[in-house]
Image 1: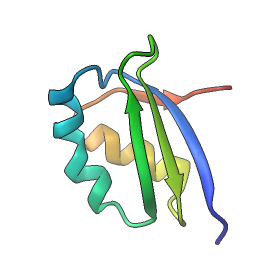
Image 2 (image 1 turned 45 degrees about the horizontal axis):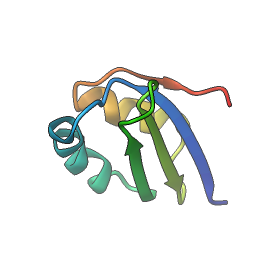
Image 3 (image 1 turned 30 degrees about the horizontal axis):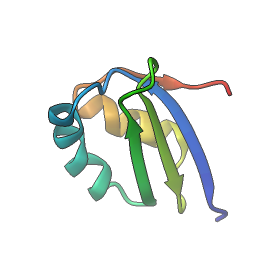
Image 4 (image 1 turned 60 degrees about the horizontal axis):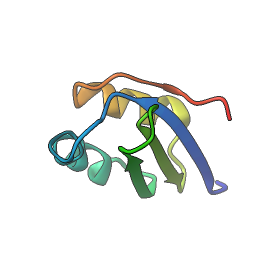
Length: 73
């Protein structure tokens, strides 16, 4: 499966939010790297994928209690 990079608009807006979502994204199979730009108005989550789908990333972040939608770049 090819590596992809996804970007999402989220409401992960502070260090506490990042800490809350960290275990969910770190344990998600197929995520090799992720980061949230909390300084961006859209709170952009970037996920480098090694097999996880865009839909699976969305489900993972929603399980952590956050809003997420694909960012159309």
